[in-house]
Image 1 (cartoon, rainbow, N blue to C red):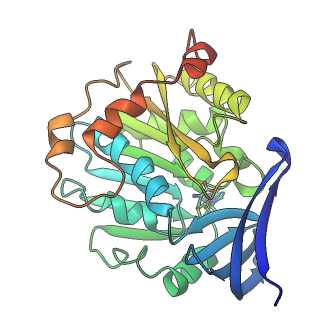
Image 2 (tube, helix red, strand yellow):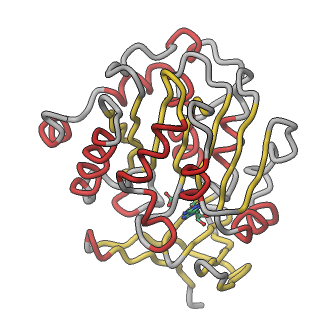
Length: 284
Ligand code: SAM
């Protein structure tokens, strides 16, 4: 009996990542992108956008925890959070685990991503009904440009790769909007692709963040088996200080919720960049 596999072919690294699938659960083309959902034999449900893996039920905790907790434990009092993209709602769920958060807005351009997540990844959407959550369906670039100055504590950019609707989320103009919207001590975090393959992109993101006014950046690598090369990263920028080592480690250690990957030690270790990244980012 022949097997069916979904394979993401990643031209930039000349490699592919594949999953054995039992069934195609859904396929549609929206105004923004092509979305597919598969049922895999070993990784649970898979969501794929424009041929790129977004979420698997099995390993999304790595990404969602690292996109959320380092940024929220870096800010002294993260009360107002904006998530740009993030339509699968996994980042929103992690953000709302923090009791200090009073309001979390998820600004996803494509409502269909969230509707399909509600259907096929209900566990990621379990906090959508939280009174502190606001789900908006609009362009995150416009939303950040219109944000009142100083009205946000943490911006999380949980977007697709820098093509199509997400292209404008990786440039200086967008980071300027984020910088203006953030209050004193505000933190920006953005998914920054694979350190093994996308170093030029990460370097250009960091340079653009600095030009937009942020003092310094920290790129935190983490494993992500379902993404190209199996290794991914997020890049943090902080308003008003260059220090990332002074995160709220005691609060992280005593966090009143369960995580599967993140803890204070993982946070500290992720701040210790591997040697090739130290060299790549020397001087910024
Ligand atoms: N974990 C994923 C990754 O790194 O591959 C990201 C997942 S999340 C589903 C990405 C979302 O960003 C998509 O649902 C997409 O619709 C959304 N997005 C892309 N461009 C956007 C924009 N300009 N404004 C708001 N959302 C955007």
